Image (tube, rainbow, N blue to C red):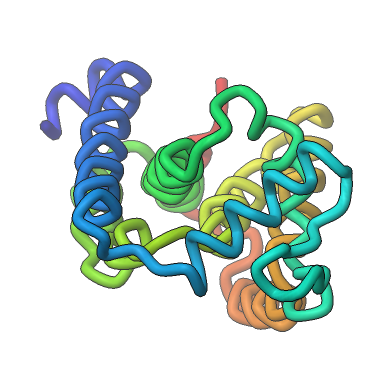
Length: 215
């Protein structure tokens, strides 16, 4: 794993991500087909997202026509609704959740490589630590929640906002906005991440070989 990641990081991370996402998706799908999923989460979000696709508004027929935005500020429901017609099924949402959340391991790897350099001995284990983290696997397995995309979006945004290329920083800013749109709690989370980041700002420029960004 270490040698492959050092010699072919892109293909290695891509294949490992697809394997991890597939396993997360399969476990959530098996749970759903065994009637383990519930109306209160997967059912309501599937209903509201399908209503965005058809009516352009995230109301829930299962909650007497109430807008889900009256419960939580999950504005990510809108882009999910725009692509929902590609596969109008709760299975599609479970697949997107597995792919999206597990991609955070790639963002974590890129971010750590950017900060400490590509030769750090613990770097190859960062994506594996993400994929084997119990709470993250449980989040991917348990129904569907748009806020799970918050974590990978924040990680990719943190990485891209520190890149030198302006187009990368612009993309990072866009991902930061999407992360904040994941739920009303995302704003305080962003503030907390910013405060935690301040003591280490500029660390990549001080460490030998710390520039491990996109080339």
